[in-house]
Each structure stands twice: as C-alpha cells, then as structure tokens.
Length: 475
Image 1 (cartoon, rainbow, N blue to C red):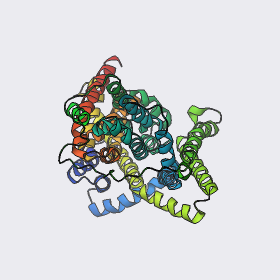
Image 2 (image 1 turned 120 degrees about the vertical axis):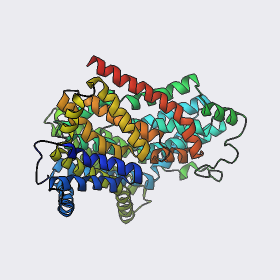
Image 3 (image 1 turned 30 degrees about the vertical axis):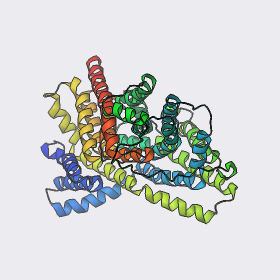
C-alpha cells in the first residue's frame, strides 16, 4: 500500500486513471499506460516528487504479491496458458473439431450457423480457443452451404468474449473478481455472480446473434455479403482474408485423428472442480467459498488431467509437455502483467481516494440514474480506442465500484455496466485482438468483418444502454 493516505481527496486523485486512459488511447500500449498511472499516483502521494514516486511505484507493484488472493489469481492467469497449450499440443482441439465436423445433422446453412453459435456457448475456457474451434468447425460448412464468412466471423465474435466474461472459473472471471476484490468489496465472487444478469451487452449480443440466425436478419453490409456469397463468391474482389485456407488438407484416416476426450476431459474436470472447491473452502457453503483458491485448484486439476490423458496416448513425453507448459505460461505473461499493474493501480487509487472524489464530484452534478449508462459509454469508448477489454476493466472497475459504494448504487449494476461497455468497445474495435482473431478463424477480410459486424454491435449496445437507464429508474 502507499506510504501516505489522502484523507481529503482532491482533483489530483483522478490523475492516475485519467493519465492511464489518455495514454492508452494515444499509444495503444496498455501496460505502459497502466504503469504511468501508477507512477503518477505515487508521485502525488509523495509531495509530487517523481523520483520518489517511481521508487514507490515499484514497491507498490511488488506489494500486490503480499495479498494471497491476488497472488493466487496471478498464478492462475499464468497456469491457464499451459492448460490451453497442452490441450492443443495433445491434439484435443483437432479431435474435437473433427468430432463435430463428422456429425451428420448439419445439412443446410441454418444448421451450420446454429453449430457456430452453439460452439461459442459450449467452449468458454478462453475466448481465443472459442474463436479458433468455432471457426475451424464451421468455416467449411459455411462455404459449402453458401453462408458468408462475414456472418461466421460475426457469430463467433458475438459468442466468444461475451460468453467468457460471464464465467467465474476462467481467466476472464478471475481477472474481474480480483479487480473487484482490490476495491475492498466483501465477497467479490458473490458480487461477480450478481453482476452476471446485469451484464446487459454480453447477454444482448449473444441473444441477438441467435435471433439473427433464427430470423435470417441481414443488415446493411451483411446483406450485401450474403448476396455475394449466394452468388458464388466467397470474398469480395480484392479482399484479403487474414489466413489462406485454400490448401487446407482434410484428414481422411479417422484413426489418425486424436480423441476429442483430450479436450473434453480437462475442461470437464476444471468445471466440476470449481463448485467442489467453493464447497470445501466455504466449509459447506458454496457462496462463502474462496474464488481465488477455487479457480487455482480447478485449473491445476485441469492441467493434471490434460497431462495424464496426453501421456497415456504415448505421443508425448514429460519433457515435451514441460516445454509446452513453459511456452503456454509465457503466452499468458502479458495478461498477467496487465492484471498485476491493474491491481497496483487500484491500490494507489484507493490510497488517493479516487473513487470517493469522483463519487462526490458526480453526486451533485449527475443524476444517479444516469451513472450506469455513463459508465457503460465511457468503458465502451476506452475499449474501442484501446482495443482491449482487459485494459478497460483494469481502468474502469476500480473507479465504478467506489462510486457505487459511496452513492448507494448497487455494486453489481455498476460492475455490469463497466464490463458491458468494455465488451462492446472490444467487440466493435478494429484493433481488438478478439476482432482480429475472429477474422482469422473465419478466413474473412478483417475490414469486411468490422463493417458487417458493427450494425449488430450498435443495436446490442443501444439495447444495453437503454436497459441500464431503465434499471437505474427502478432502483
């Protein structure tokens, strides 16, 4: 924690998050922007001495590890990478894709779209896995039944991050729960669960995608893309897909295809371990269980099951799996660093009284009914500009929750607004990693994916913003 505590917050207390927001939007570098915010905060706390502020910033970042819950979530974040990497290395993803592809119930474009949508709902461990599996399974079927790749990109994008962000036992949930805990809220897991039905954009985006399939709703650029595909052209003339799938080879020998169980068993073990861990750590009461302990135990069991299943196939050695483990952990390092800096920024903001100052500033100027919609819009703007929902979580959640606590607004509502805005901005942003990955997984032109998806994202956002306003009116 900071060496000094501001008992009477001033406008200086908003400098850290504002600086982080401005720098992130300007530079697109979330990690450097978060650290700049931390540095600014500790500089203010230490009589505006930048050198002392820099030293205290390093100490404050290291002090995050003094909290056992924060440390567990950081370790979990690093471990989810090895779990995903092991499943991919074992061939579990390829086996699962092949298993779905060989099911014979998909015989038209409507069912191909349902398959893409359902795959996004079922695979919730990590958004990248969701996109890659759903894209790999569905793309050949979309091409076969003349449904546009832009439609595929939209459907898998609308069911990746929006689904993952509502699950407490993956990296998304652990990240958000840790940010909530850093604000001093009691039982952050319970708050997160209460915020799930208030995550209006994510829910609307998922349901809207289902309605689009059901009613075959094609708006603007999507309508033109569908007409082009039905006319026999997979892409527009001059369009450049992010990946070239023309040389994809299908595996004919089913004996050579790894078992889908190599993917299913580790995920199932992790899912089942979560409530059991909550029951154990809560002394028989799941609601009182430790979320940080439970997600750590769950991912550890998932890794153990993935290793045992892979070793039993005889295709990998312990040494090979250890290399996969280290590479997977390395892939998650940027996310772990963002979380570490987000927690440190939350600590210094708490010491500065940032949330209290903002709450007092807006209480007399902005009607409480408008606060949730404003948080939603601000989060959306940041995420769209930065291209990172995680970076937006790190900036907005430590601001939104203290406002809710100070003004007596339900904390889950403000948390839901902050998360929803971040997901919408990330969903609509052309520089978002999930948007890029959706284009890649569907082998579509990236700009075409952004153009065709945007009208649907805006409709879902308008519904969500209206929902936050109506909820505020009845609170």
